[in-house]
Image (tube, rainbow, N blue to C red; front, side):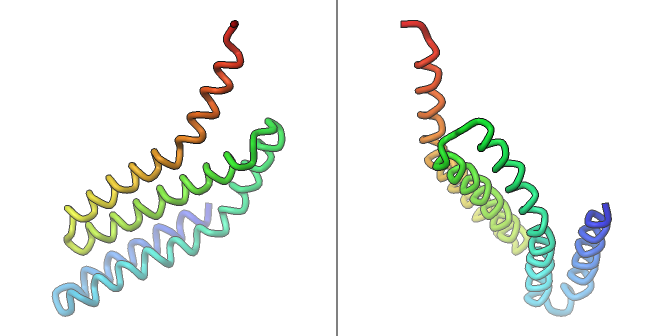
Length: 130
């Protein structure tokens, strides 16, 4: 629970610092915002190991193909990176560019998910009576 307080504190400090600096140096305010976001991301990296362990145990129990495991983590990573990039674009006043980044990310995620969809369809087809 301490982590959420740290995240909130860093986010609020970043927002206040950005608001204070923005009238004087707008270019530096954007830099502060980006650095604050990166600090938050690095704080969250420690929680990823627990997530990986849970997913690993799930995949070991279900005996799912390990390539699907890799694809799922890549999709999650792409989703987070795209969202972070789109937020930076929006913060810098480029909402239209941020929207394009989100659209591109959704298309990439769909393409990456095709092997998973194919695998699910194969499993369903095996279960159906012939």
